[in-house]
Image (tube, rainbow, N blue to C red; front, side, top):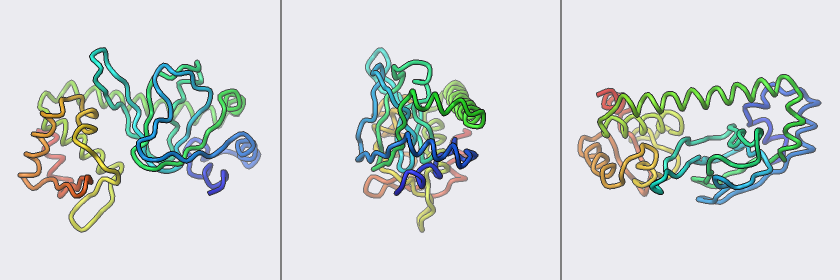
Length: 226
């Protein structure tokens, strides 16, 4: 894959002019990361902007009790650490879920690119979308005291955003452990495991070699609204 091909997959560069794309190419490099590899950690100094070309990553933080909370699951085309445009200290950690390709641009070069109004607006829109996602997470956590509803809602969203249709239903494209799912909903692993067992017994869910298959998206969404 060339850097030009990578740029074509990044949402914020969608409306970039040919001149801007040439400039991006001169500044950017491509990096390949293996599964479960750390890109950057919270509180580390990070001097580059990371944009996901292919694969999936999680953005997460640890609370004061040392429990991990997955804030976002990101897919291709997303910018991963725009917060370092304000300062070079990462406020979140990033880890791959699968083998991933990332476009990397040094922070000072990216700030120079932001002198272009079109790109600056695209960054603002990207930030706004992340804020909306955080609002939805907060709303879901506040309104759903039932862990089953929270898990069902999270699985439905993963199926919608990262699923592929297979004979048995909707398959989440990356392996999903009970521990990772628990970190996504902010619950204990044991409690999450019991919910998954219940959903499997109801015929809503199947797990094949670490991959979750949602048997019926509509039925799962109904559980999320209970």
